[in-house]
Image 1 (cartoon, rainbow, N blue to C red):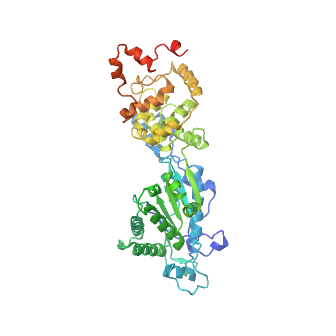
Image 2 (image 1 turned 180 degrees about the horizontal axis):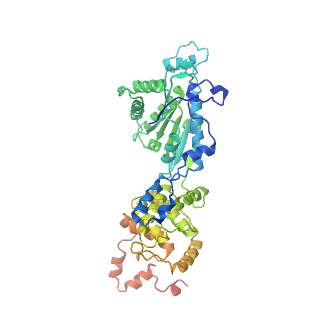
Image 3 (image 1 turned 120 degrees about the horizontal axis):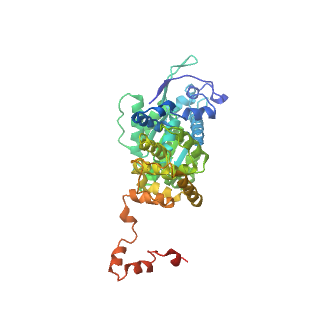
Length: 476
C-alpha cells in the first residue's frame, strides 16, 4: 500500500478546478511518459558476458524476469482509469453543500430541501477488461493501478482546512466464488479497514445493515474506484446469486457514484450480455479485450527483441526466424513463459563449452521451464490454434541443418538423442513426452492386443490403415 501527502496540480478542465480530490491525483502526462513509466529494462552489464565464471553469468539470468515491455493496451487502460477517477470525483467536491448532504444521508433518505449546489448526481461508469488466463491481465492491471497511490492524505487546500483528510483512490478485491453479496461486502470492509488501520469493523448481521455499513465506509473515505478481479466467477450457477451481486454492484454505482473496474476471463462477457443494463454499466467507461499475442504482431516483435538482447552467454546468437518461431510456439505467445524458456536456455548452455542458443536448446529449456504449464488445457488448446507457415518452416529447417553440421552443439547437457529428427513433428512429440494424461489420449488402447491375436499382425494393421510400410505403393 502506498500513501502520499497531497500535492495539488491545477486541473485542465475548468469544472474540475477547486476540487482537491481531482487536483491531488497525478498530473496529466503524455502517452510516451506513461509507457516509460510502465517499462523496465534491466541493466545488461555487457562485460559480464566475458566473465570466466559460469556461476556468475548464470546468476545474471535472474534479471530476465524484471523485463517489462508494455503493450499499447496499457496506455488505453490507464487513460480510461484516469478519466473514470476524475469523473467520479467531480460530483464530490468536499467544499460543496451537495457533498455534505451526500455524506450525511442515504440516497433514499435525503431531505426534500435541495442544497443550493443541487442534489448529488452520481457520475460513475464501469470499465471491463476481459482476456484468457495467462495473457497478462493481472500484471498489466497491477502496473496501471500502482501508478496511482492507494491513499492520499490532505491537510489544507489553498488555505482551507479539510474536514475529511483521507482519500482512498482505489481498492482491489476478488469476486466471491459463490457470487455472495455478503462475502463481497465483507472483503470490501476488510480491505478498507486494512488501509485505514483503525481496527477491524464488525460486519453487520443482516445484508441490509451490512450494505449501509459499506456505503458509509466508502463515502467518508472518498473511495475513487472499486476494482473487482476474477469476475468470471459470476457465471457460477446459484439461485439468485448472479442477479443479487450485480444488483449490489449497480447500487454502488447508482447511489454512491463509484466507478467499477471488472477484470475477468471470457465467460464474463457472456454474463454481461444477458441484460442491456449490465452491459451498459460494464462498458460505459471502456471495454477492453486482452488477447494472446500473435506471431506476426508488432507487440511480439518488440518484446522478443528486448528479451533476446538480455543474454549473458559468451557468444551472441542472432535471433533468426526459426528461433523466433520456436520460442513463440513453445511459449504460445505468453510473455511469462517466454521469459522462463529463454532464462533456462541460457542456464543450459552457460559453461557447456558452446554457448549458442539453438532450436534444440530452446526445446530442452521448455521441458524444464514449463513442466506444469505445458500440460494445462489452456496451453494445449492455444498450441493447437497456432498456425505457422509449415512449408516455409520445413525449408528453413533443412537449410539450417545443413549449415549447422560443422557447428553443432556437442556438450553433454544439450546433445539429446531423443529429440525428434523431423521438425514438423517436434511440438507434438515434446507435448506427448511431457504429458501426464497419456492414457486418455490413446483412442484405441486394445489395438496391439488385437493385432497379436491375428494370424498376420502386419496385414491386419495394413488393412485398418495403421501400418504403411510401402508408401510408394500404398499411397500411389
